[in-house]
Length: 425
Image (cartoon, rainbow, N blue to C red; front, side):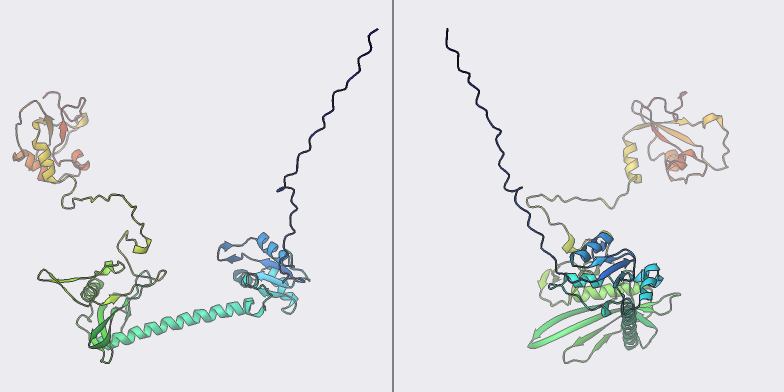
């Protein structure tokens, strides 16, 4: 009897363990705690709060307060210490504002949103005093700022009146402002080195009358030089229309700077040429206002040099010429086009055999049919064609209403089914 075969078991292979990803398995470090400058404070908000980037949501405000140790609540309670409020909501006196008023300023401070921003955006975050950011103080500061602007505007106005009195012996004018709030008080300057340094400055003024019905304008200028008395330019300082005064302003500007007023923002080096030769001449310089300030009205479509797109290297710029002398549909062009074809005159019948009254002296309406096979029966010099071109169109003429020839129509005989062609011809 054969010995029994030993029973061999297959080796058991265990499941391989996957090594943990060192990146995902890494323990997350605890987030660094923010400086707890709002610890122990309970805040609420009212109105639409805005910063430089735009409107700020309540979630962002709540998160900022909680990150820095404070507590945020939507409604004002007895524990509220600060109410962040907008100026508009404070003036309305809403529910939140009235609750804060009842708590009193000693317990609940009503501040603007700038208080939180200034507390958190400083290099060293710290809790700032609330008094400079209170709504009452902010509104008072805005009123003072508005009053200062009014005083500044009044001072500028009175200075313009004083200058107009110096130039024209009249205090009925002030300096003109355009629709872009640009003050037409333009300064030109240059430095001369004739033996000793001399600074010369021209100030150009465009004046407008106080009376607006109708307004009157005038132009004047004054020259101030170091160690010299002031010189006034009064030649054009007399009442005139805006077009006349502005023309004098532009002319004087170009004489002193060598640049047109419309090109004042261009980086142009002016040159003076006499008898075909360039001569040295020290023009006055005009310094345009900085970006963001009004620069005066500019030609339509003008782009300031700093905003222009730089040309691509290697790209070829083709000069495009425009014919600005002739107009579309010029009579000479039409006559040249018609002279290359032959014509025949056919009687025109109105659609539907409608009777049409003709005033005495009026010429009969004719339709001119173009045919390239038959010889021409008349030319442009023919009286019929000349009269059809030169006679004004009548109000009830179908051709005149469509902008064609006044008493006739020009059509191509090669088009089939043409309503203007007479089959009898």
